[in-house]
Length: 219
Image 1 (tube, rainbow, N blue to C red):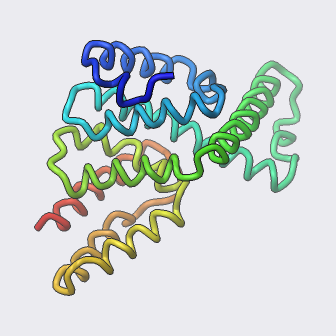
Image 2: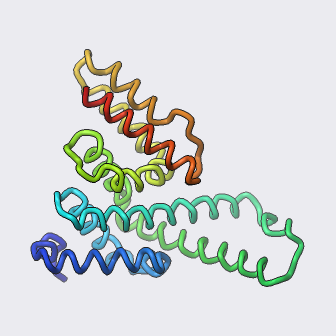
């Protein structure tokens, strides 16, 4: 029942904890999503706190977020596809183990999306806060782990498009008039040539765009 800040005040414990959480995320992200919502929210609070610290564990935290939000995006897309109709799995026409496995995977992701929705109901701003923390760290602070921090950004942005669009408008409007055009062009560069997928090609293009956009923002 300790507060996240209390738990994270012990460096050795923090390191061991995030190594364990990262290993779990890599091995079985679905198990993490199945946590009770209060426990899941506390875990995400710990992750967000460590992300903003200049310590090695921040890279583990970024990896956890990447695994988690990538899975969330996949589950969201699966739920949207299922909502549009149930004929998506009928095209193969087979009854072998491959089609059974595919159906099981769809069912697993639909179940996970239900867990994500319950977590969102418990803490509606949880993923918005992660997006905000990581983007501000990469774009406006002296981030020494820019690549690892940038990896979760694309799935976060794709899953929270309305929030990120609102954030962009806020940043531009609050900037001095002489900086507003530069910021607008930088945010535009961020989206150059991207589609709404998490393919390796799209991820790499986004990372390249991000480096260019951050350079423009800091000039």
